[in-house]
Picture (cartoon, rainbow, N blue to C red):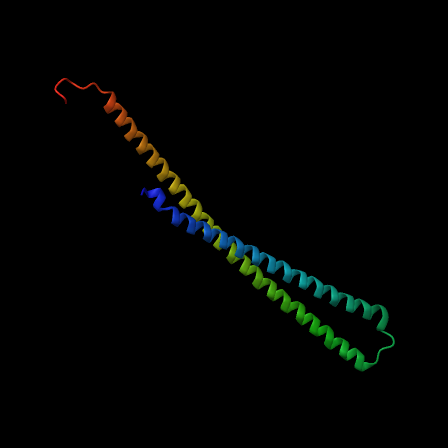
Length: 146
C-alpha cells in the first residue's frame, strides 16, 4: 500500500472535522441571529410601551399606576441589557467557532496539498520504473546472454 493510500483515512478525518466545524459555525450564527431578533422585539416592545404612555396615559393615571409603570419599564430595560449580554456571548461563540473552522480548513487544505504532492511523487516514480523497464527491454542483448 502506498503512502497516499495510507493517508486517505487521515484526510477523511480532517474533512470530517472541517464539516463538523462548519456546522458548529452555522449553528452559532443561527443562534446569534435568533438572539438579535429577540433583542429587536424586546426593544420594540419597550419603545412601544413608552410611546403609548406618552400618547395616552399621562393625564388620567394615579400614583400607583405610575409606580407600576416605572417598575415594569425598569424590568424591560434590565431585560434589554441582559439580552445584549446574551448577544455578546453569542458573538464570542461565533468568533470561537469561526476560529475552529478556519483552523480545520487550514489543516484539511495542508493535508490535501501534502497528499497531492505525495501522489504526484508516486506517479512520477511509477513512470520512471515503467520507463526503466521499457528501456531494459529495448536494449539489445549481446550474444553471450548478458
